[in-house]
Image 1 (cartoon, rainbow, N blue to C red):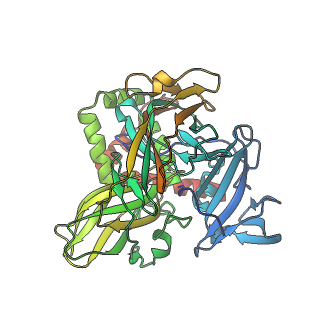
Image 2 (cartoon, helix red, strand yellow; image 1 turned 45 degrees about the horizontal axis):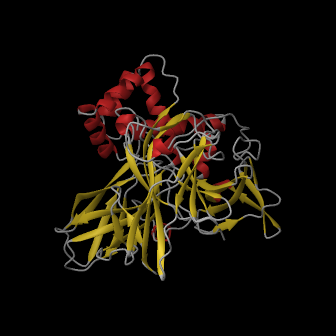
Image 3 (cartoon, rainbow, N blue to C red; image 1 turned 90 degrees about the horizontal axis):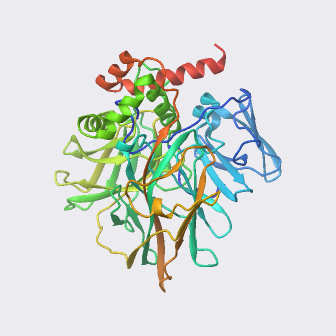
Length: 504
């Protein structure tokens, strides 16, 4: 069986660019017979670590010989015995990237459907923006992917990442490695740690605004069904490597959304609930950011400038983002047979999905069950787990904000002044491979307490686009005006790539 994952992988542009959630990627050529390249990349050596099967079984492969994919078959060894697995039976492939020179490790995953179609999407080289690695006592482990979707300064935002792997080193310091591994320029405004000490056995998570919530008593769903009646409880009840990620719609003229109804137990008199959700942007949804931005041609710079000024362009983008649900999901509550939107779930990067808490108003939802509906566009979301809690009263023992002690680039430049506060100074990473190490003094441990550490970052990025040629005004207008037009565009793009790959 595969070991417990750090977080599921999966991660708007135009009048479109997901405000708060989406990843980035780079394209490169690759042998069409092979889904996963081995070795020879700039960031380390990749191997297929294991797979999740369509029926939910998880299989971990031996390191030697390395697993490989040829045509429609995956070949590997499991406990010394050779296995041959049809790709059609695989729901998700897990890839481990190890860079011994930098002492970094990342485990990411995606569906074979998307990986095989994109071919060149750089999943094996961990392309997303930016990557945060935590020192776990032995090596740097991929642990955060902040401010995805903030593609211009007007979209700059705060992000809160649960650093599950972070441990102090021998000298009592927390160490982070921040790296640019994509074709873009990243601008990090500030970084700090929020160190939360709480009672043993309790658990705290954050909402998108940085508020802590007690989720120790969170309850998994008692039912979860999609529009076809499939039982999704095994996929959505726990934070593990069972991740529900339907591939992009193959028929752009048909349905382009899923519909999932989750049912939870509820105290009869409960007026509020906190949804504890772990979800992220699907890899295809991440890819569509660049594709949709490129519709603007040379006018994309003007569009950036309009967003940076704020006001109506930014408000229109937010409204569009909620309407389309490509990178934020409406949470509908069943109120006596009528679905009412009562919350918004932000997405995350395509390679790490953060747990987020969303408060829900249940004042008009009587009874002893809570029914919740989500309608994610196919290919844009990876869903890992959902739970609800009705008791958010417990408080942590202590919350300590820790500013960085040191911050230096790989060539020795001091960044401390750039990262200490949110201001007009930024740490800019314009090149793929740029990186910096940041240290923090770990507060003394509290006897009998459990510790969680969250990274609070603020920043944005700019994709490196051709920025040339006329804008595709017809498509831009269509996506802006017609509900689900962006999801249909994504389905059309996916279908064309699948057709080209099949040679038909």
